[in-house]
Length: 631
Ligand code: PRX
Image (cartoon, rainbow, N blue to C red; front, side, top):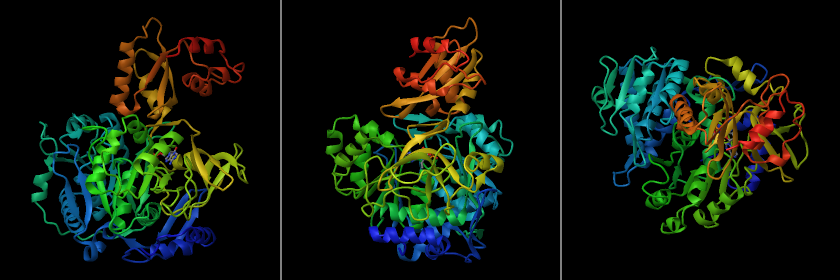
């Protein structure tokens, strides 16, 4: 590929050019794609509105770039290797030709069911090939996909469907995860009671479990496929047309539907995939994320396929049938690039080394991490036992909002440093700011991380709520995108992400806002008020600690704790359950009535000798009561 950076000097040159002549830089990269019509203008932006437009006037279809253009040279190359949950079930290998046919055919199913350009399609599926096919089929006809992670509850699913006013739901009878079966259709049925916008649900048979099909609404996937052929021309899309919506939690209120558009997202995910992972033609690349998250969108589906890569999709979990499953799969397919989350590394590190050592991992050339800061110990374990000290590790910092990787080393090309994401990618202009918004210059330095210039895959808005987009990302600091993260910069200019500086907590690599969980807890009849904080956890990185005030006379016991966690699981999903729940007489508050979370965080982390000044509290006496009864 013409834009592959192969040396440190090339990285430096590219970076310089991307800052000095951003439009020329990105235009040159964009030349490597297939456009139905080229752009009139590369970039127009104004962070005060905020408005960002890349490749205006250009026409394309992302699936022509991910599929059609490879047919001549890579038609028989494997595009997707699908590894099922059960190692005894047959894997699926789809060539580019087969994937092209199956995407086209399913695109016709969507059309046949009344889906047109611009309509929103909710996808609630396990990690099966049909999930990737459905995503691409939407893109083929210009429908906007909204993938909802299949671990979310019916309430979470319903609220996302309602927010985007989706017309159709794609789901399955159930899903396999380890030795569990989850009845997705039953969960979806619950959600569909509240979502009048859904006219049709198409159900994939995966587990074979019993389901109730609602007449006139529910249809079987395989039956729908029989009604159509596999010839579906790609819809012509404007570069700035919506490609997808993907929800992410905010520190307050309902989840934010981040909107990504066609042109810039394609260019940036392909460019970063190629350069960060240093993909070569015969490599076998595996990202263990779920397509329900941005990592799966950008680095299982779009980025790799745009580059004609072979991408592995895994349905199962790292510990089934045993804790060697990842390594077994690496050996089975001779995976060359392996990309996972620190939480998975920490979980697997706890098992005896034989589990790793019995597998041949010599194919691995590059290792990657994403989703949360990686601790020193996990980094070294990964380096030594998985990479055998010879595979560069890319620690990739980015967000649902950024669409693609922002700060990371380029494997083996730019330097790495344990626990540091290191350097910004070409086109990315990070800046550290103090609380007043003044840039912290020089290095070493520490501050809040913002980005001061647009990049092609920045989310364009929050679906249906542009004001919230502005308030959340562009109001803290004038003319800058605020990430919500804090960071350090060392004397060489390498960045290390230190964690969130807002009320978002990253648990096992998943973003969880405190307010939405508190809102759920407060719905329980026994509860007056609650506050959630994060505390350090060996495997999850952070876990949740809830402080809850109960109504007079209610007994705060384990049965109630379970009820509260069940309520959270039902309304959000099991990932948002609290590890610790403490019933408290009241919460420490400032005179203006704001909960002093800083104190609650310290108590949860057992940092009791460093509580800071509590004399300004309205009710300082509550602090000792909370400490005394901490769990
Ligand atoms: O806090 C940062 C953390 O994950 C947040 C973004 O979460 P999400 O939108 O779910 O996207 C995750 C996958 C891209 C960031 O604000 N984060 C992500 N990657 C890293 C990270 N923290 C430290 N190091 C990383 N490599």
